[in-house]
Amino acid sequence: MAKFFSKLKQKIFGEDITNDIIDEAEQDGYVEIGPDSKDSSSKIIVRPFMLESFEGIKEILDVLREGHTIALVNIKPLKDKDIIELKRAINKLKKTTDAIEGDVAGFGDDWIAAVPSFARIHRGKAEEKKEQVANVNEFADEGAEDK
Image (tube, rainbow, N blue to C red):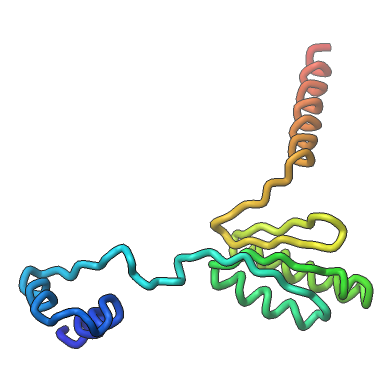
């Protein structure tokens, strides 16, 4: 148990803290962790990718699975090169984002955004139009029942 605390102390406090303060904390049964903890895994990274071949999708999928990265993917090089490979890559990206409960959407002609489960992509007018169509269909169904 003492080894665990000493390793934890080194990671949190570094080597410049005095042992007296740490020993006091251990005697009280707690170790204080300051707000300036060096935990970089809690930060979210927005990372651009260039998809030049189908094999390039692997790196994108790996960072999405880690759960701390929003991927902005430029698909133009693969689109110009081989449209069938592009469709395969996008299909694989969609399946992976579904599996991790993330989201994927295209913007513009040459870019795709893929996010892990902590985020959603706003689709704006397209979503509003779907809702309007659904409301119109419901209204039409109700009108048909009245007759």
